[in-house]
Length: 154
Image (cartoon, rainbow, N blue to C red; front, side, top):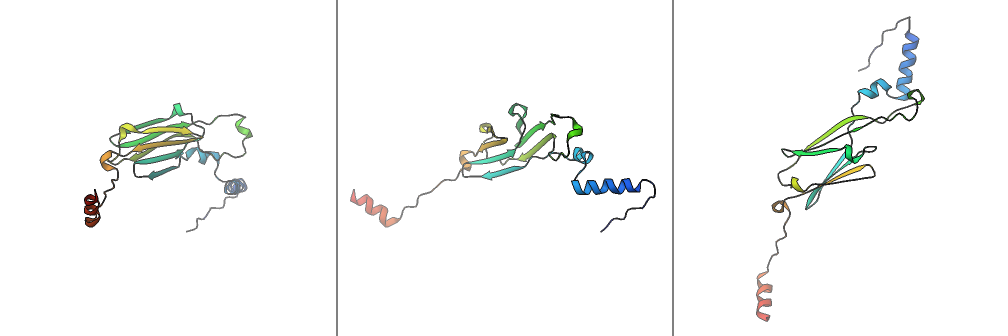
């Protein structure tokens, strides 16, 4: 559904020009400030563990808050906008800044007491081991004729 804009003789050129620049160059700085930062996360499962990887560039490890409460894993932090140059010199700011929090429900099959956290090259990796009873177990099948023949040969 298309939207209609009301034409106003005064200031309409400025309004149209601002809209063109906004559409052409993307979000305005005001819109950027309203957009929350949600770092992307990959979660994979292996036979013995879950692995959570979060892209967290420009965040120091000591500024991360990683917690598990009631089987909810929460990663919190903040990426601060560092003004290297005068703000007027920026032509475009697309990276998001500010506080973030990501939470994930964990199954009862994981050992939350043994979670390991590593941070390298802007990527946080959480390794969450599964409890022993949740790990896959291989069951060997004895074939009647072969097992008894092997025992008889001894």
